[in-house]
Length: 287
Figure (tube, rainbow, N blue to C red):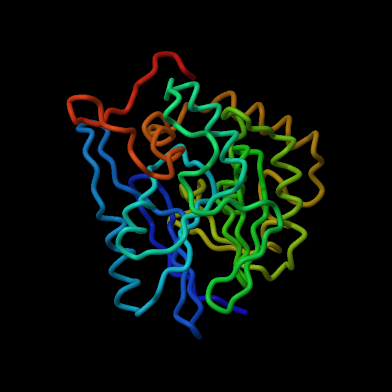
């Protein structure tokens, strides 16, 4: 079955969020939402999330799911705000516990920070089935960029998070804690095993050299034949050598330190301190 997909592009973080809906039942899922954040002032805004809310309300949709493909390192999630306004079950992959353990220690979050994924309503295992309205959906564990990365297959549409980019841009970096180029290669093969006509929707686009417009939709067939990093015929060893060499040249994302602290908490801010103010930590020389 073919869901309707509405994309929302946040140019500040180059992130694409999606509303995926069943036209028959008017039920929908929200994928990879954005909470606007100004690092120079520490102020947040719900402008991007409000655009999603306005669309859902105007279309008369009901939210079944608020899905996170992974703990994002380049933007904060607006999931708690969207859940408060629209309802729906907030979900991520079960390996969120691995990410919480690593970054809970890195940010010295203390024993009050639960590392069992309980901040989320539902944790998906590899291959789990679910529905968006009457549309059959499936969660695929596709680690490599992070240990908890998931791809959500909803009808004929796949939402790959950062695992893949548009064919002319390539693949995700693998140098975050728990990342692995070899693991990413195996994860991409799971996506390539889907029917060639499966629509794939990216979480980001940065406009590859020579391309003038942003793009975020392609197909399995196009990725298999045209992806500049991992098309058919590229071996696991060749890919890993390329990916590791490339990752060694990359700087950390601009918002990684605030984003991970929030997103490992399912989009909630750290608890307020005794003066009533919430703080995000800035660890020195963490990366």
